[in-house]
Image (cartoon, rainbow, N blue to C red; front, side, top):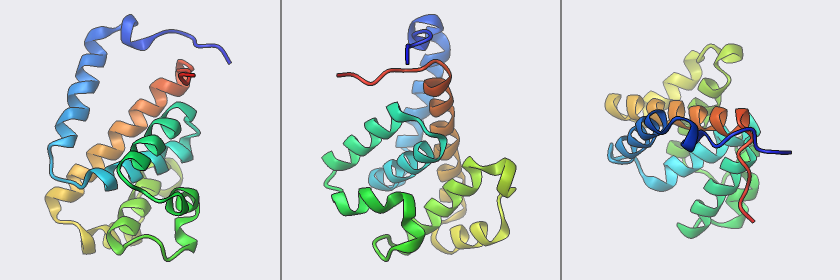
Length: 146
């Protein structure tokens, strides 16, 4: 697969806004490891090789286990994730596939049980951001570095 264009060079102002959005999300108080799990799970759903590579590497650097990384795509079936992580992952799946799920009440109720109102908004913004990054990377065929 060949890259279509370098979106950073093609529209620096747009990317400056995305980078600023991402930086703001990082300052909202959600656990960095939780954010990276969410980013990795959304990227798996969307099939974004670049982002899967990036966020799995970030999680490894943060001390995430290979076992949890390997089972993230089937987190429903494992006891390896906390209730808070499970709620975040369910919400991530619901919003990443919103045209299919319509953000079901069960996912929202699980989210509300583990996250404050502000955290729910902050997590939703993080999910929005990774889905935007996935669409940029997939749409323009961002390539993995060797």
